[in-house]
Length: 306
Image (cartoon, rainbow, N blue to C red; front, side):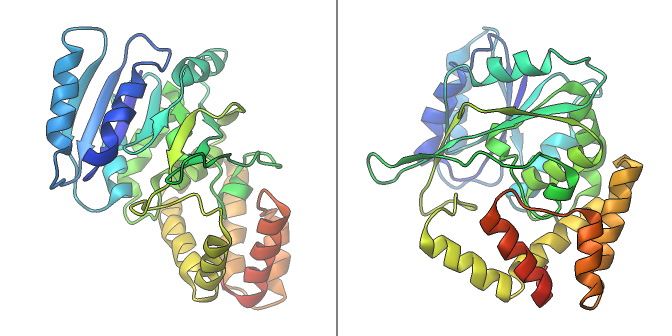
């Protein structure tokens, strides 16, 4: 089991996350900790953690990130995966893993032939900073698939575990994904597009800490909702979609023929005048996971803000 964690000025939160890895239910793992130019004590904390592990079955490999943002940091680790990777899990520096997280994911993935790309994704608890605030993330209503992944990410990076076949696709495609907005959204798009099997762990597996320094938060409040709608109107969402699409088009050879056609229709629809824009979006089968999201999505389509 290989665990990838991107680090940047995470000293305040990193220690409990590292400690929680020891209760993941997997006896042996290697942690790649990629520091992306921290100016606090993050590197020293990781070194102390590695020293405390000693010569046991778990170990830490410290890396230097490219210092081009959090997505590029994770892409750099994915691109450097072994030619024949085993299971690969992603972690965030300011979360806390709940017990048995990895053992449950490994059990689910090991039921499948190793040659079939597959990944586990799941729910999490959004929590903090107020005492007693903890909320389980929504259960997706629709299936995880490429037509959903083009406009939404339900495969949160801090819950992702890839089997070897899926990790191999990610390793080969990562050098082509420069400029993406989000690495976990891109993984959800890439792997569903490549026909990987998506397995959902319905039991929340991570405490997803909410604080002022979150690069991307849970976005559960009315204020967050309002900010998202204003961002859509200003074209922020469309810009993020475009950044992801630029990378996906470079990774097109990894997609199944069916999903290449969905991608083609989606790209064409975004550029088409109304009403052909709606017709092609419907032909592509694009959807979001809940009613509110679908209403917002089709509103953005009508306004040409997708």
